[in-house]
Length: 398
Image 1: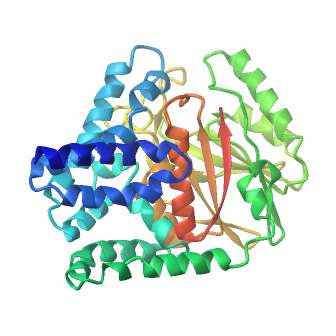
Image 2 (image 1 turned 45 degrees about the vertical axis):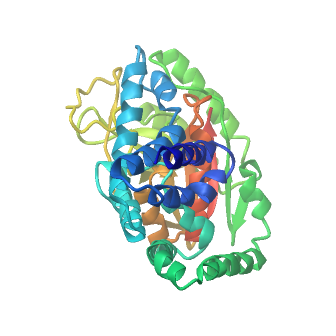
């Protein structure tokens, strides 16, 4: 038993760790399933899954130490890392059959509290195997996993990969959008049948408690945005500022006529002290919130157990919106995956349901250096956007 467990734990850890390297994570994530099914006891199955999730989310303690604000948050981050990994691994302890492994993947994606932390899910591999299939791709993956033992008994296991391989070859041979290079290099922008979209990356770091420093920061990024007048729609990163009336008025005055800026901001809601991690569509005539984060970062941003105080200089409390719908512009549909949402299968399942033309990816990564989190976000967004058949545009603040 030990001879079987040790190499499985090591391989599972490797499959989790490689999520921070290009697109290796979504491609290798399905290897977790045979590694778990190969075990004979609940304890060993739990150990294999735990190794996968611990290795894949190893950057959480370092990220928490920066992201959670002033103070020593190493213990808080370590607790979040260990508890979330244990929760995600717990269901796999009971996965002694292929259909149970498929059920665990689906339950982890949809059932709280696991759904709040279901990063590096093997369900993401549906975008690798079945691009442009939407929810049917998720169903195909789950059914394929469930019937694998039957196919094995029929000695026809070689037939299992034929459909995804054939479809991927056909998908890759489909003529791509003429501006597909612009989608891979957001600074160049892209054009969707008359709707010119451009995203810009900024290097502004976090906002501060200094009003003067924040105003200087606001002036800097507005000046940078103003240099991109050729785009009709300009996408900017997440939470660049708090959407107080004075800030909103300043930005509206600087948006060129005929252009729309999609600005990531902390947007005050009706309840004092409660905010949306959202995107404001700003023109020279005014602004409105068009997207909001489905689930802001738990513990740090989304704290349902905490009563908002209304203190704008303390840690802000953010609302979870749970469900989003596309917004149409010039006949084209858009959805947004804001920062942490990019890691969560349940948020992406909404995207695969609506299958928008474009997915807007906004984030802050100034807190994530050395954690692997930005790379995991990109890998996850790549696979899920591929599944939905959507192009994506990314705007980061580092």
